[in-house]
Length: 198
Image (cartoon, rainbow, N blue to C red; front, top):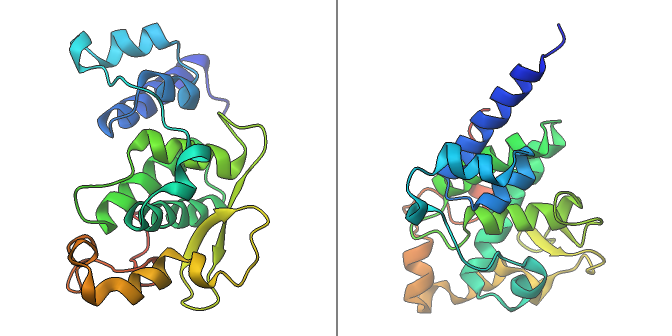
């Protein structure tokens, strides 16, 4: 059965609600759903003070200079996102589900905002904000974890793998121990549970 325009609009509004609940900016919701930014503000943000503001994230400038924990969490999010995309799910639904999966796996405070996750997914799939992909997810040959890297990165990641570095520094870095507790949900994507069902 063909979906009607009303069905498509309702799906877009439901998706917009999910994005807003995860902290998305109006601009991000607009790109994901195609809804007019004014409609997004009117429908989802009763209080103008509640609208998320600030400069949108730009992963091209950020990822390579980010700290170890942020790069590890970016890789965890993108690993979940890539696995779901590879099973054939659409980008928008995958983004929401992968972000929820990331929140379930990583300890608070989460270093990757929903807008940052959207930006990373855009530049990995070459959609929404990006015309072509600049990132990809590769398995580290040393530890087996999925790692977000620039396209064209040599496969033997070695010192470039945030999870290899995390393991090396773990015993003497209290910040890493707090962010990735041994008795927590997971310490690397290789030990992470499967993402929640759609």
